[in-house]
Image (cartoon, rainbow, N blue to C red; front, top):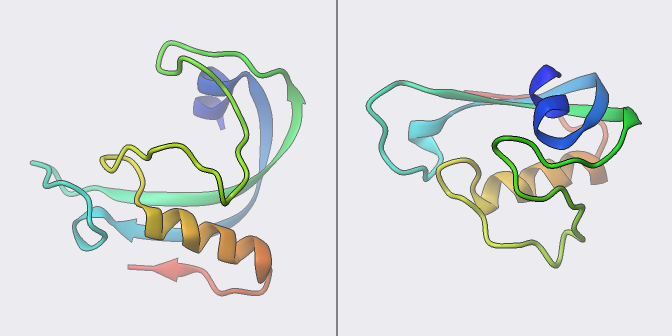
Length: 96
């Protein structure tokens, strides 16, 4: 949760593990290392939106009006899947 604070200014608490994905199976550009991505649903408990060393701005977006994604980080399919967790809270954790 330290990373979220450093990059957004928000304090959060983790609520639920949503997915552990192997990047090589999910449309990311090739990498020299084997990388897993963990998606964790969090709740904002404090702080204020502040840009950090790795962020130029902190914003929230409507799911139908998202900015261009950095495919090295997240794919459109992954974002869609995370919204499915919001729409269906009993959806099971995805594990590669």
